[in-house]
Image (cartoon, rainbow, N blue to C red; front, top):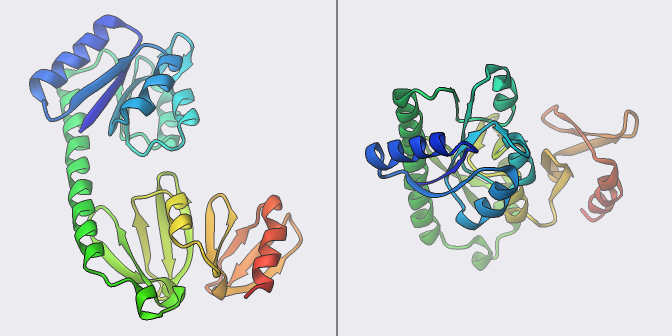
Length: 254
């Protein structure tokens, strides 16, 4: 697992680095930064799996880093001297939150937990790869998109789901919740943009940055209150203004 440290105080940065190198060598530190600007320049280069972020930096707060790196899918451990940032850290889906002075045992536990989750996801990714290799593409059999199947993975299981069973997908940060026709909900560990690309075709439409819907379950579009779409499972979802015209075109093409 690759780790990147963002901390403006050299002594604390060295302290964190030494603990990881001496006690958790599997968590390899691939880079460090002491400011928001430096972090924004280096994090995309190193593509780490875990960020250790000091909240308060000379040129801003580490929340600024995450806001400007929306494609980052790794884990985040915030480090700060002030616990008033805890709620804001939660909004950014913090994996953990440590107060200064950083307790060695707490740091060790937090990083070990991140490493364990990382290994679990890597194992699932391997299973997913093997499963994909053994699946005959549905298109080769002449099947339409609705009969094709996709593989979804959460923290515990790998699922093979028929595309036609998917009513809608809801964004949960770096995760996506699939709502299926049998009432099941599966939280997949990839962002909604990934599945939008995977399901791109005649029936699926991104009505909002947080919602991807299967238009086969469309019931009606309500114009008032900015515009909402009603699906056959009873769900009501907002439609982004800039997507309305394209939605009408997609419905007419069904």
